[in-house]
Length: 179
Image 1 (cartoon, one colour):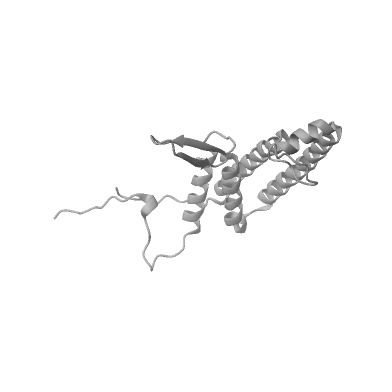
Image 2 (tube, rainbow, N blue to C red; image 1 turned 60 degrees about the vertical axis):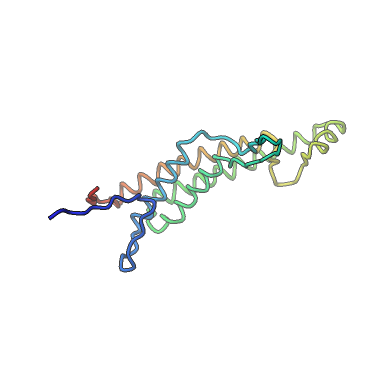
């Protein structure tokens, strides 16, 4: 008698209605997505413009990979929060405080930069749609991008500790799959 084994793509797998919720599988999936996002080149988002043979323009937005990585780590934090131990709580709090402190520092630098500009340079920035808004970093200036790079660094530290937490919890046990 021959065994019929169907090989399916793991991403397309859906369990039966009787299958129980698996926190470990969900966490593993989320951490894999974090690893995928973190393994890419970190660059800002941009529009890719192409023209067809008739000269029609087609614009496609390529997302900011830094923001994607940050959001995936935040999602991992949300899903794993129930498993946090004292060390993990401390790492997240410290990273959050560092990010707040860096944001405030960059806000002050941007404000000083604006205050030191001549009226001619301010008008040039306005023409280029670059405005100053209190308590907000302008996405068109280097301060914003510097902050995003810092935020990525902090979220890498958090992700590293999330992975260490998984090991401390011995959350993943081996499962045998046939292919």
